Structures are given as C-alpha cells and as structure tokens.
Picture 1: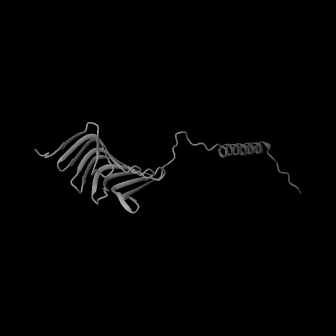
Picture 2: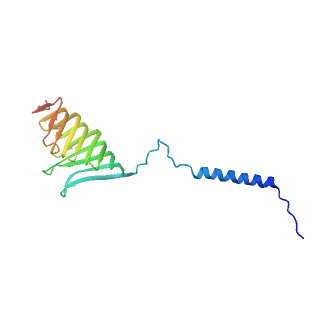
Picture 3: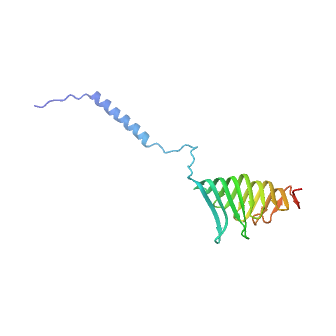
Length: 187
C-alpha cells in the first residue's frame, strides 16, 4: 500500500522565494566594499608618563636634562609634549642654567626643544633670564630666547626681542630693540 502525499506547490514556491530573498540579502551584505568614511583619520599611538625625565648626552657628556610632571609621547611622530618642566643645560666649565616653564615640546628626531609659558631661568653664576619662548637647536647646539627677552647678570641687564647663545648664556648675541645697561643697576 502506497500512500500519496499531497504536495502544495504554492507553499513550496513561497519557501523558495523566502530562501532566495535571504540569500540575496546575505550576498549583498557580504560582498559590499569595505570603505572607510572620508573623514576617518588614523589613530595615533600616544604613551603618557607622569614624573619622568629626558636627557641628551654627546660622547658620554650630559648636554641637558628635563624633568616633567607629565609627558605624552606620540610614537608615530616621536614628538614629546611636556607639562610643568624643570630643565637644566650644562656648560663646558661645569656650571649650569636651570629653566622652569609650564610647557615644552621635544622633537626626538631633530633633537630640538621648544619651551613656552612662564619661563624663568637662572644659572649657577647668578645669571637669570625671562622670555616668551626658549628653543634648543640640537643640530646647531644653539639656545635661543624669543620675545620679551630680559637677561640679568651681576652689573648688567640686557633686553631685546631675541637672544642666541652657543654656551648656555655665558656669552650671548642680543637682537631686535637691544638695550644693555652696565654698572650698578640698583640705583
């Protein structure tokens, strides 16, 4: 005895149509191009350190060192942003000049430092200066003050727009509106 099963061709057609629709949706989703938005930017890798320091040595001799409360290092560009810094530049004769400021940026590739905001500096030989910006050019070994420069030493006060030195301000060149007062400056 064989039994005949009734096949409903309409239901089969609906099931096939639904399966085709699901397959079409899957194909459209799976084969779409992987396009990132035009305004998408690569994410930089930033490492942050607290209470850290950097230094530069040449032939085993310490040239400068800088302590910062906070440092952020961009691993892609090798730029170090520093906050609340205290830096020291060492002179040939063993004396040094200490600089404090709110911000500094160090370019590790070029070995340049730019110090800004609230700069105060003094040396072990009673020299002091204030300025808007201090730049260390590591390639040329030149320390530059830019903007509202005031340098004081015993018996001398110098002001100008810019000052440059190759020996951490034991000697310096003053430029732009340069004015020097020598002698007893307390009178």
